Image (cartoon, rainbow, N blue to C red):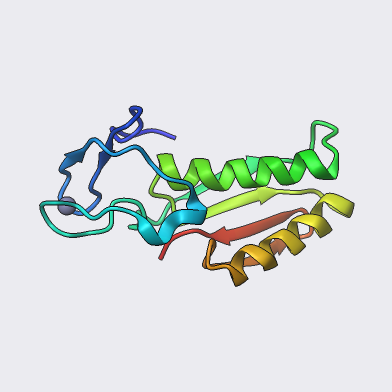
Length: 129
Ligand SMILES: [Zn+2]
């Protein structure tokens, strides 16, 4: 990841570029994100169309650890990027199954917008519009 909006406690409005000093909230609290005081755009949910990729399954992770990494990756992409998608490398097998169930739940809660299997070992999660 790169860009000028990575400093701790800082967030640049994607639309007008104004810098704000807000600490980011968790993606599960996305409904209460603050708006830009200059142009009224949401500070966290605007997308720049990019994709972030994270591998959560190839360091001998257990299912529990992989799910924790999944949640952490979602928060990281929400808080520190403007990416539209998070691509999770889940491998085949039990981690992939568990992540699918988790994403089904997160979508039902409105935490993520959408997700789809990209191929057997990767799932593409839409975090922003
Ligand atoms: Zn703005």
